[in-house]
Amino acid sequence: MKRESWQGNFSSWFNKALREADVMDTRYPVKGLYVWRPYGLRLRNHILEIIRELLEKSGHEEVLFPLLIPRDIFEKEAEHIRGFENEVYWVTHGGSTKLDIPLALRPTSETSIYPMLKLWIRSHADLPVKIYQVVNIFRYETKMTKPLIRLREVTTFKEAHTAHASREEADKQVQEGVRIYKQFFDRLGIPYVITRRPPWDTFAGAEYSVAFDTLAPDGRTLQIATVHNLGQNFSKVYGVTYEDLEGKHQHVYQTCYGISDRVIAAVIMVHGDDRGLCLPPVIAPIQVVVVPIPYKGQEKEVQKEAEEVSNELKGGMIRAHLDDRDLRPGDKYYRWERRGVPVRVEIGPNDIKRGQVTLVRRDTGERMEAPRQNLVAEVKKLLDGIMRNLTRRAKEFFEERIHEVGDTESATRVLKEKGGIVRIAWCGKESCGLKLEEETGADVLGLEFEGKEVAGKCPICGKKTKTCVLMAKTY
Ligand code: P5A
Ligand code: ZN
Image 1 (tube, rainbow, N blue to C red):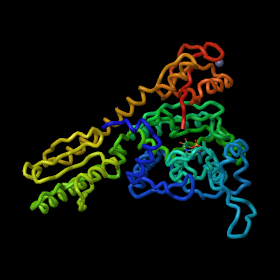
Image 2 (cartoon, rainbow, N blue to C red):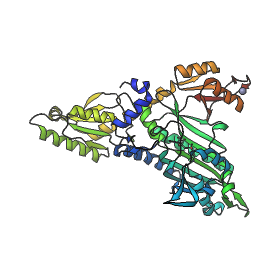
Image 3 (cartoon, protein in one colour):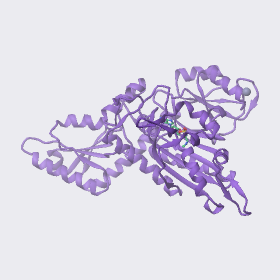
Image 4 (cartoon, rainbow, N blue to C red):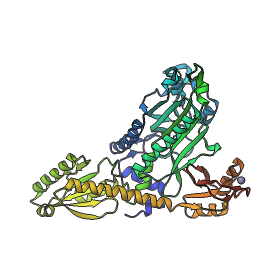
């Protein structure tokens, strides 16, 4: 399937794709807030199932904290509040009564969770704590808002928070967080780079931040996950301590990591094409749509066969849907294509006569005939093949857009002409990093998390260096 308009004007492609697939309604009358429609919400929930599974499997327990945070508690950690003060919505009144202490709508939950951790953690035996929640958060974003990508109400904020007895354990936890997100994005076929963010782009209150970025079709990067090492910054402020083996009170070491609706945006934009969504079978709300092609006089027979096929697929644990509405088959094809359903099964009188069905792949448009017997196994094989193809196609697109460059001029040119990500030497000095950004008009994503050492020269100061940064135009 063609990917021309997909690449040409990403913003308009994205909005149209969301609308035509009934994922979201963007007409809600508050800026930065959008409505999930049933099909979109099912897609969202399938994605959540995967991250929940990965978190539970690695020992994280789900919790649920309140939305409101009292101002005095919210404002305790100085760096954190500095990072968020311009983004917080405040509740100041209950009815017409002014509240004694204004309440913040959480922009993230460190400051609501950690005072409670203080109460929960007593001794070293209570550690580590590994919890997560899936909640909405509010951020008064001032950059242009965009459905799923830059929201003022993030509706799908999955945040994990952990507490440990030592710095080493917290460092290890960062690695586990990274591993979990790798598995998550691999399952969705989303390609990524992982970088350690530079100091000026570290999460407010963290010692360091590791981030995942993927690529939009227009060549800009989108940050889709972050993992932060908080050190003892928060535990000191909120008094989160444990008694060690010698009976001494120590502050815990903490990490937190989060993803948002942006991963849903990533699934949609990374795999889509000119006909709209093209969903990975693992998370497609409907994996197979069955469309009867009735001919005069044989409507009953065709309908019966289509019902049987649909039920058989469902019995085989495939998310099948029978579309037997009174519409022309062509209209149905169109509609299910926009919604990204991976496989369409067509059943007409000829198929019945020959003991077969016709299968059509959403990703390639290919039509094929399959024997009616063993249909479940055949369709499962096809769904696996589609998943592999989507993953391969996305990876290819991504890797073609990572460029090695030697100086800021070629960085600027390559980013302008080809988009994507450039890898460029950097001595590690903040002033050189900021200068790199200034001279290229792009952002430093950071040092590659598991990057190889190179022999290079910082293009700003000329100093020899073994490290590279990744840079890109970002969303
Ligand atoms: C980690 C979880 C945090 O808030 N606290 C708990 C830490 N990190 S973060 O980087 O600020 O956010 C985590 C991820 O959420 C996405 N994100 C957003 N998505 C949509 N709209 C927004 N306004 C928005 N802000 C952040 C990013 O993917 C980010 O990496
Ligand atoms: Zn330098």
